[in-house]
Image (cartoon, rainbow, N blue to C red; front, side, top):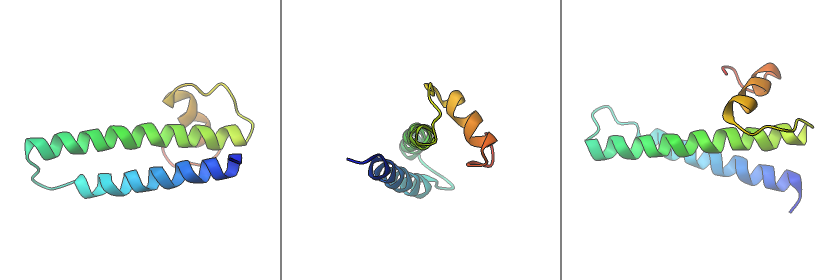
Length: 83
């Protein structure tokens, strides 16, 4: 699988996860719904930094092994608005 295809697949997975997270945001959730929303958030967060990591690696940045090491350069390169 080409690097571009792999990144596009990761991006599509993240977009789908973000969509399901938005559905989980209810105004008056039960405890079970709240716990489900938290799990969806955690999944989205994990996918977000790993997808950004792949994108930055395509640009030549390496040694990105944590969310902090990914979000700072992504912000510096105006890929994201808020680190």
